[in-house]
Length: 429
Ligand SMILES: Cc1ncc(COP(=O)(O)O)c(C=O)c1O
Ligand SMILES: [Zn+2]
Image (cartoon, rainbow, N blue to C red; front, side, top):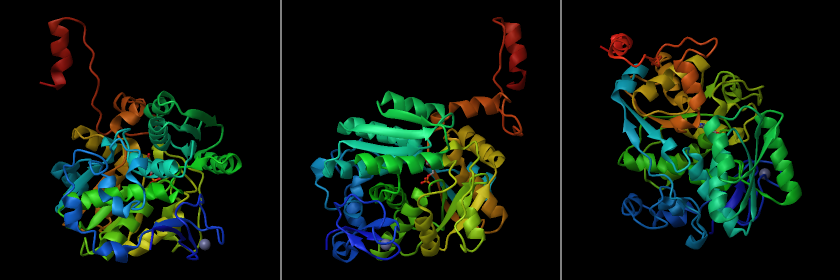
C-alpha cells in the first residue's frame, strides 16, 4: 500500500496528495503513514549505512538518506534540499558531569543545519511536498526559526513565502534571516498563538500551503534527527532522549521515529523521551502533571523566545510520544535555561536559549532521580548560538534584570598601553 494520511484520533485515511491539515471527520491531527510491512524487507540498517558519505542527491542529505521512511513515493526531482542534516553528535563528558550524568551524555547539534536550526529537516520535507503538489505560495507562523527555514527553502524552490510572527518577540538572527531570504514578513500585534490561528485562516482563505508543524510532512523530515542520532550510535538505543518542547513538533516526530525504527527491527528497545518546557510556557507539563485529564493552555512568557508558545498545535501527538516511549515532561526556569546555555556555550559548542532546555532538563531529572546517573542520554540542541546574540551580550554584561549571572565571561576594556592591559588582564593571569 502507498503511504497515506491518517487521523490519529479516528483512523480516517486520506490520499497522500490531499491538501488537508486536520481530519475532515473529527478535526484530529494527521500522520503520514508508511507501509512498514512492505518496507520491512527493503529497509535495514545496512540500507542506510551504505548511503553514509554519499556525495550526491538525494542521499547526501541527512533527511533523504532515510527517504523510505520520510516520503517514499516522492519523485527525487521534486526534492528541495540544501542538503540538510548530517549534524554532529558531540560526546560531552564535562557537561555530563555538570548535569550529574556518570554514564554518557551526547548532544545532537541541530543548529548545524543550513539555516541554523532543526527546522531545515522539516522544511525540506514540507517544501518538497509543496513542490510535488504544485504549490506556488507557502506560509507559516513562527517564533523565528520556522520562518527562517521556510524563507530559505521557498526561495530555493522559487516559491513565495509568507511568515507571521509576534512583533518584538523574535530573536535578531532569525528576523534578519527571514527578511534577507525574501519572505513577506508580517509582525502581528498579538502573541505566537494568535499568529498561528491567523495564518491557518489566511491559508484557508487564499489557498496557500501551510508549513507549520501541523503539516505532517514537516514531522516526517524531523524524524530523521532520531534516525541519524541512532545511526551515529551504531543503532544502539540510548536510555533517554531529551528535547525542548514548544509547538511540540519534535516531541511528536521523535515518538513516531522511534516507534517505526522499533517496528522495523532497526533498534531493539525504545529509549524514553523527556520533553522539557520553559516554566513560563508549560502547557504540556501542566497536562502531564494533571494526568492529562484536561488540555491546558497558558499565556506564554519566557526569554527562550523559540518556545514561547501557550497552545501547542501538536499536543495530542506529543501525548502519544509519551505513551509510546514511557516518556516524561519537566519544566525549567529561565534562570536554569541561561545557566545551562552558559555551560554549553563555554564548552565551545554553543546553542540558542531554548536548546539549553535539553541540558537544564537533564540536570533537573537527574536531581529528581528520574534519569539514573548511569544513563546514556542524547540531548538535542535545536538552534545555533548566533540566532540570539542579544541574550548572550545581555547575560555576560550583566544587563539581564532579575537574573543571577553565575557564569559571566566579563568583557574587558583597556587603554592602549601595556600597563593598562596588564591591569585589565589581572584576572586572566
Ligand atoms: C530553537 C528551537 N528550539 C525548540 C523549538 C520548539 O520545537 P517544537 O515546536 O518542535 O516543540 C523551536 C521552535 O521554534 C526552536 O526554534
Ligand atoms: Zn479523525
